[in-house]
Amino acid sequence: MAQQLEHELSIPLWPERPASAPADLEPQIVERSKSLFRPDRALMGIAEPSLTVFLPAEPNGTSMIIAPGGSYRRVVLDKEGVEIAHALADQGITSFLLAYRLPGEGHEGAADVPLADGQRAVRIVRAHAAEWGLDPDRIGFLGFSAAGHLGASLLVGHDRAIYDAVDAADDISARPDFAALIYPVVTMMDGSVHAGSREALLGTDPSEDAKIAYSPQMHVTSDAPETFFVLADDDTSVVPENSILLYQALREAGVKSELHIFRDGGHGFGIRGAEGLPVQKWPTLLSDWMDRIGMGGGESQ
Image (cartoon, rainbow, N blue to C red):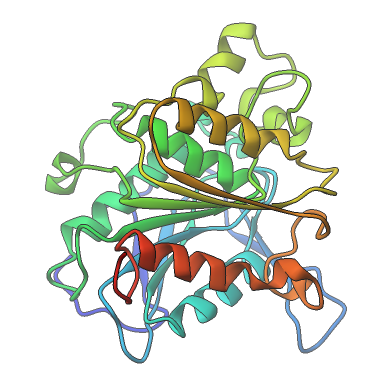
């Protein structure tokens, strides 16, 4: 994969189409916006996952893998992907927009395909960091909504062997150096679960063992990276307990984290939906936090 990074270059995650994908699965993009000036595209039919590169004018060496949400049934490309990448570019961060396999689309081993793609994404970026002018020790993972569950699963399961190695990149650590989870789905347990995401991931009637196995807050160790959370207290879709449970587990494991719960914002605000609300400053809070922990372009404290 010796190639120079280019803006909006698409990088396949896997050398070949993964065998997990149904033979008839083909990509579909649905435009959901009624505005000509604010697209809101949803990507489905992901048989060949990829990373799309967004280059800043002045890269600072930090990279961010962005995983948009969509209830594990779609990938919301614009408000939780492209718009975020553009905002990070203003901070000098090189973004990789992750189009990951969706467990509800008939993949074999469906519950593990998002995490496999998350692991592979980190490994690819780290394997080629020097070649691409990036710091292999400043790779972040930014997950929204259901992809927050992917991110949380990666924090606690970056070293899980869930696929057979396909090349030398798979010998490299899949642990992100830091993570940011925005109104994330976390738990699969009854009570606080986002039912749609759980059904897509685990089916309509998962066992208690499956619920426990895929609830990241129940598997946190001190090896998890520092994590940043943003959500709104009035989120009735993915209730705040999801973030709180993971924050508490990280704290008990001795992993430093930062949790921001805003009064207003609901679910899925991204950047555009936060305009006019206090939560609109979350990208600045994230940037400041990254600087403090030595992962941004500024000086750490």
